[in-house]
Image 1: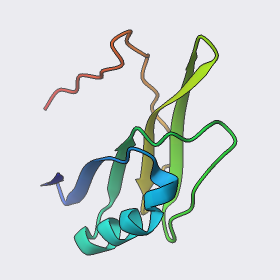
Image 2 (image 1 turned 30 degrees about the vertical axis):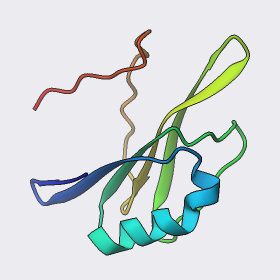
Image 3 (image 1 turned 90 degrees about the vertical axis):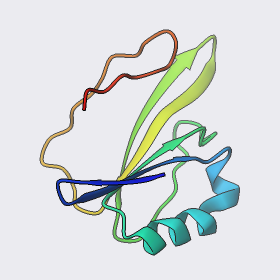
Length: 98
């Protein structure tokens, strides 16, 4: 799903294992000329990363019972001057105001 607001093109993508779908991810980003993409279910462990040319990766890992979960991968076409972090909710969901 791709959203465009205030001149930004933002998409959310459920990867269900991003390492095996990296080509599809890159094609999706290029096809939609995205500024920001949020990934869920990347299945990446801490210390394991992926690269998308011309994008900067920001990630937010959490650990529960020795199992690592990647809450979100954020790829930005322009690096941020500051990073905003969010507290984890037990449900794993984040509510944003429009």
